[in-house]
Amino acid sequence: MSAFSNIDISAALQQVLTAFSQNAGVAISATALVQHQFSQYIEDLENLQDSINDGTVSPALAQNVVDSEKASLDAAIQAATGLRLVAVQNAVNTALKVLEQILGTALSSALKL
Image 1 (cartoon, one colour):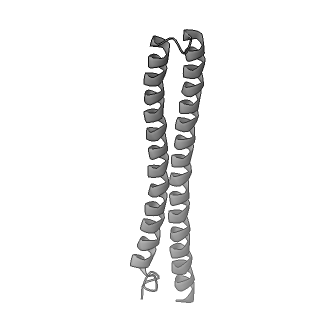
Image 2 (cartoon, one colour):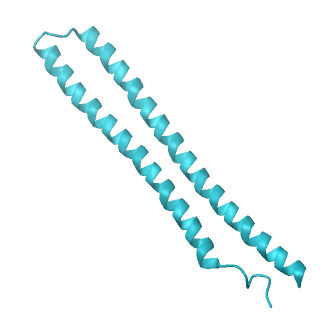
Image 3 (cartoon, helix red, strand yellow):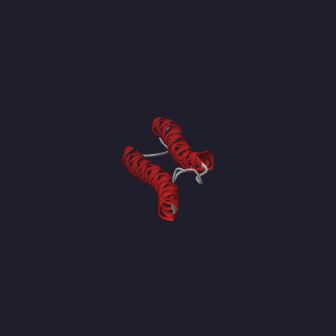
């Protein structure tokens, strides 16, 4: 009798796949946030250019707005990167816990033999 015979490999694999799937959703949401922020940045640049052209906004004020928007976009990119890293780490931690459970069960079974 194998020490691994009491282990439900498909259940363990399902746990790992579920964790990866859930965390992939976080990464996808983070990417969507950056895409939205970038689209907003482009739209705001176009509006600023129109405002400069019609004289309602000075070039200096427009530059301040652009600098602020660039900082916001950079923050969104950094946040998304962090969220993706956390998502990957969470998925890896789940895989390690499942592996620990499998090895613990196998070791326990082996010691009972």
